[in-house]
Image (tube, rainbow, N blue to C red; front, side):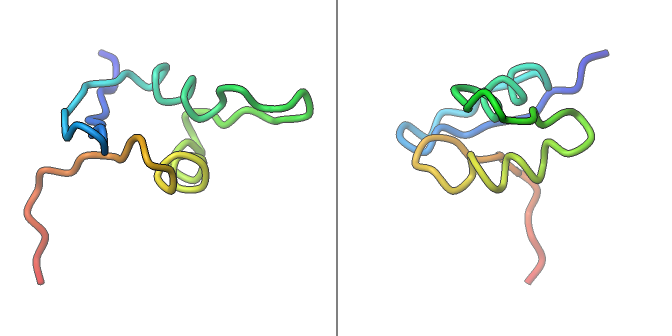
Length: 67
């Protein structure tokens, strides 16, 4: 069974279901020739560094957080 990650579009608020392949493709998209691709073992680091900080996508967590 493929791992599904819920992604929220920051612009529309829509929640999407991405596979790990989708996530890795987004993290590694349009990088220079010397780029070493992130993979399924370090994708969270890559997501936080390159994707979460932009204006397009974030990981969606629908679990209530305790204060």
